[in-house]
Length: 233
Image 1 (cartoon, rainbow, N blue to C red):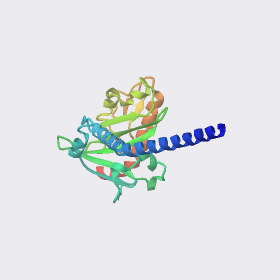
Image 2 (tube, rainbow, N blue to C red; image 1 turned 90 degrees about the vertical axis):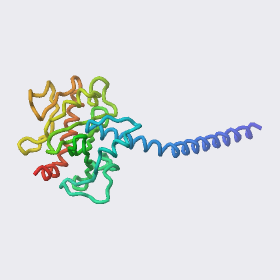
Image 3 (cartoon, rainbow, N blue to C red; image 1 turned 90 degrees about the horizontal axis):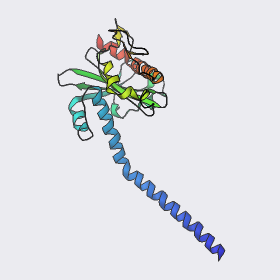
Image 4 (cartoon, rainbow, N blue to C red; image 1 turned 135 degrees about the horizontal axis):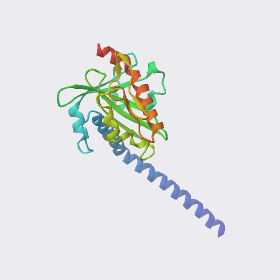
C-alpha cells in the first residue's frame, strides 16, 4: 500500500508539473503579441520624444505615422543598406559586430514648422545596467533639436536623473561639430562652461552615469560621422 501511495504521489507531481509547464507556455505564447506591441509603442514614444513631440500609448502610433516620414539603415561609410527595416534593428546586437558590418539605423522626421530632423538611436553601459536614448539633429546635422534618455537600473535621484526634463533639456541647441570637426557633447562635472556649445552639466552625485552617457554619445554618434559630414557639405 505504501509503495502504491509513493507511486501515486510521483505520478501526480509529474502530471501537475507538466500541466503547469504547458499552461505557462500557452500563457507566454498568448501574451507575446501584446508584449511585442507594447515594446513597439514604447519605442515610437521615445523616438517622438526626441523631436519634442509628447505622446501617450493611445496616440503614439498615429503621431509616429504623422511625423516620421522615412527610416533606413546605413553603414559607417554612410552607404545605405537595402531591405533592412531600421525600426527592427537592435543596437545591442549590432555592437557585437565589427564596425564595418554594423547596421546603423536612422529616422527622418518633419516637424510642425516643416523642418527636417534626423534621429539617431544610442545605447551604452551605465553604472548598473544598460542606458539608451535617441538624439535628433536639425537640418544642419550638427545642432541638437532634442534628446531622450533612459536606463535599466541607475540609482534613483542620482544616475537615474538622465531621463529627467531638467537634464535632457540642456542638450537643446548644443552642437556636435566645431569648425567642421566632430566633437560630440561632453557631460562636465562641476558644470559646463558659460556659452559652451559642446558641453552640458553632469548630474550631481551621478558622475559615473554622466560619463557613461557622454561615452554613449561619442561612441554611438561617431559611427555616423561620415554620413553627417557628407550630408553637411
